[in-house]
Length: 122
Image (cartoon, rainbow, N blue to C red; front, side, top):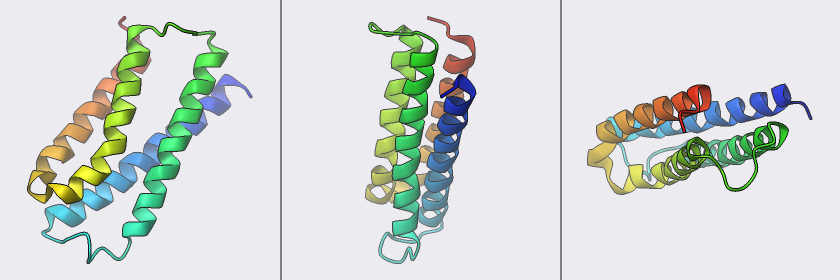
């Protein structure tokens, strides 16, 4: 597959992750619980598929760009952000009072990931 196809896969995965996190965060910030979220399963499935697609597209792009082990620092940062975004969906329900802080953290993590992808500082 071409680099552009991997980029589309990667970005689609990212959009799915952010969409599902946003939906769950709004639900929790509005004082609702995990049990009364009628779309909890759908949001979880969207998040999981998004995580897979982001990883698939990311590693596909690395292969197309001939970036091999050991990874440069910017790839490590993006990988750690991917792990963090994966864990946030579970943290949201465990720490509902931190919903607004997690909202900001999601934005910051997204910004840092985009910065790393575009500028590759290290």
